[in-house]
Length: 83
Image (tube, rainbow, N blue to C red):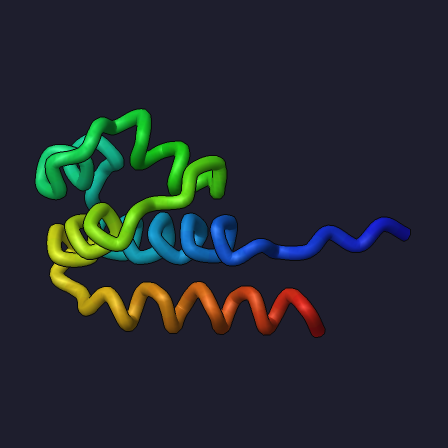
């Protein structure tokens, strides 16, 4: 059996996607409100890009959540994947 580690990038992206979907908004909406390109938002959500702190904060603000909540959720997902 192959164990795949959930990287912090993937966990962050997954958390971002979950929070975005919970708000009922599209990647395009999030990109527009945060001043980022929609392709970039998609890459972040898939864990293919590591967002800068500035980009992370912009996305969190667009979703009206503290950046710390987004990071905390990502850390929880990563910890749960290790079990």
